[in-house]
Length: 138
Image (cartoon, rainbow, N blue to C red; front, side):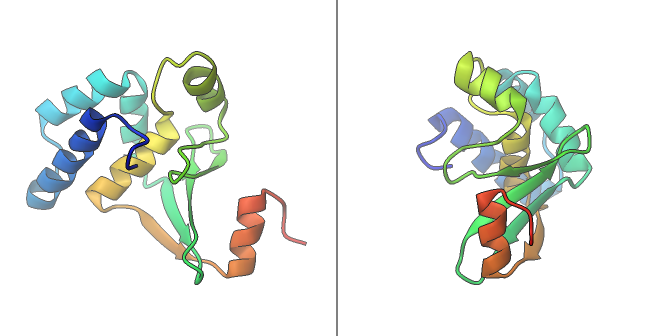
């Protein structure tokens, strides 16, 4: 997240993290700020968070990737370290039109991390290599 997002977005995630630890909720003012900064994908991302759709895949070598089950049930492997999601909305809205800093899947990852509700799954280094290469297991 560092340096990939505007400072206002990073501060917003810090505020969500702080208040969520204290109250287990996101106050209305922060929800409004999310909608203002990220537009329509904010509500969609919050829905993914509520559905517990984000899983952090980590390997013994320390590599991490996030898998997000989208609204249609499709699984997306997102990389917050390089700010990338393979979904069509990321390609079109973020990369092509530059309308948004990120898609709902990456926003859901950031929100889950801030709220401490990311599901965790440990995989082997070999499984992580397969995941990162986008190929199927043999």
